[in-house]
Every structure is written in C-alpha cells, then in structure tokens.
Length: 469
Image (cartoon, rainbow, N blue to C red):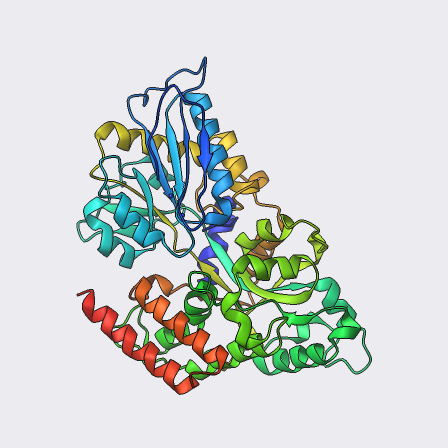
C-alpha cells in the first residue's frame, strides 16, 4: 500500500483532506444557504446576471455531500461554477452520521441527487441501480491508479475515488518538546516512540505531569455521541481488522474473528484514561469538541485525519502553530509495529445517478471534471478541501501545503514505513458501526465489560453480512 501511494505521488503529485448533501434550483434566484440543526444543509447556485450558459446548460447538478466540515467550501464552489457557466448547482450536506439515510430518502425524489458518494464495493453493492458507468469519462482517464476505481462485474466503472487521505495520532510538537526537556522524561525525542509499549509509558507519564506541561490531559475527548463516534467504530477498528485480513490474506470476510480485539482495547483505554474528559462524560462529546481542545492547546494529542487541519486552524483562539502539527502512527501493540506508518487510503468515490436525465448526467460529469482540471477547481481542492487528489491533472506546484497533508505525503514516501490499508469499506453496514459505537460508549461508562464488546462486534458483523446477502 505504501509503495502504491508513494508511486502515485511521484507520477503526478496529488493534492489533500475530506468527509455529506440535497435541493432544487430557480434560475432567477441568487445562491442561498440554509442550515437546520440536525438536518441537511442546502445551497443552490443558479445563473447569475450576465452569466453565459455552457453547452451543458440544459442540465443541472445536485450534489449530496458527505462531510459537514467542508460544507462551506462546496457551497462556494457551487456558486463559482454557476458564475462561470450558468449551470445551476445545488449542494446538500447530510448531517453527521446520516449520509446513507439521507441518500436513501433523496434518491427517491423527483429531483434526486445527480452526484453522490459511495464508500467502495460495499457501497456499490447497495447503490448499483443508481450508478452510471463512468469508464469513458475524462475523469476516469485522469485517474493515476485505475485499480482504485470501483468496477462492476461487467467491466464498467461505477465509482471514482476523488481523494487519498491519511489518519493517525495528531500531536502538538511544541508540547512534546516541552515534555522531552523534563527531567526523567521517558524518552527524549518523538522518534523513540515507535510502538505501543513506549507510547503508553510516555502518555501516562505526561498525564501525571500535565500541570508541568500546561495541559489538561494528554488526549482530546474521545467523542462518543452517536454520529460523532466514527473515529473509533470505523477508523480505529480498521487497524486490528486490517491485521486480521493480512494474516488471512483476505480483503473481506463474512465471519470476523476480531483476532486483535485486545489491541483495540489497548489504545482505546489509553485514550479514555489519559484524557481531558472523564470516561463517563464522553457520551456528550463531539469531534468538534475534541478538535477545539487540541487547537486551544489544552491537550497534546488527538486521533484524526489530515482533513482535520481546517478544524484546527479554524478554531477561534487557536494557539497551535502550523509547524507544530504532526502525525504519529496509531500503535496498538502489534508485533513489528515499529515499521507501521499512518492509515492511508480512501473511502470516498464519486458516483453519478444513472436514473437522472442525460442532460443532468452530462452537466454533473462536466462539473466534476471542472473541479479537478480548472485552475479555480484545483485551487479549492488543494487549499480549501485539502484533498490529496489521485489525478494526473495536478502538477508538482499544486501539492497541498497544510501541515497534515504534508505529513501524509512524508509518510507515504518513507520507505521504512508500511501504511495500514483502509479496509473499512468492507465493514458490513452503518448499523454495525452504530452498534459498535454504542457498545464503546457503554464500555467507557463502565456499564459493559470488554468481553461483551468483543462478542457484540463478532455477532453483529456476521448478522449484518448475512442480511446483505
């Protein structure tokens, strides 16, 4: 995986970050945006005065966006595209943790999304009836590694990845340097932290000496509010499951054994026991809460991905300097993990609605191709969305410059590190993830033993896989 993504960078040098949308257009109205608590956010960009319609003017675009944290960027892109072409673009952003439900609701409407997201082969199996074959598009021709696309049994291409991402433990190097300088510190450099045993020693020592370090806890809050728990039931769970898959030389299974459940428990316990927030209070915490804690210098570490830079830099009162924002792999106690890198991959694939009119399909394809080929689109992809885009339309000068994107690229090019493959596109369902997240919340609150969590994961995985057949 590491060598594959490293070669992608060398071939064309991409560009970095990510994460949900619905609406309809009025050609005489200005762009408008409304947001309701707990509901999808909708903006429609329409033809502006003096704007000329492009040759796709007979169609329109409706994008259902997956990531609430970049909703504003998509709304701006919709407006700019309409200003340039006259083509109406509507962006709807699903509320956190509700994308599948929102898509299910919207896809049945008369004015359904023309552009939506699937999360790989599992997503394609759920939405194949609505996925247009994109094999003959320029977008597909620009894909550096065409093996990354979601293909059907007929050889068609039904999902095109639009971003490569990485996640791990984000740390504030300024705080770490302060710790390394303390008398009797467990280690004296970040390079010495290369496995779980050492990480645990360092974290527990830092927690005991938090007042000396000027922090309130080592880790930011482990967000366990329903819908805010994806960092654990998906991203963190990917590590033990990836190791299990590697042992068995598989990429999916109907019967997960959860072989490395204890390794998951290792790092999860480290997070919740050395945190700014007591374990019993984590059910009220969101991802935004934890990122704000990091941005305000209250904690030294937080698990998240390179897409989180905008959440860090955008916090009012942010005190963390750009040069101090770094990545550390998520160590869990695996054998040989000294050579483990970040978790790098993608679960984000664009699909075009095969049930939409031909005019809307062509307008939608044109919009996406504009995004990854025009100066305006590529600048937004790199500098605002923070994508590491896997297309050959990006030059060396168009690499992302934010610190977390740079860290992902650094790890991808480090021949001594092996990236952890993203396997959560094989997870059976959102229901499985939600059940797992609920169990983790009960565990953190002390009302469920770890053995019960482990058993639930195994049972729910098998049940959801069977239900999908």
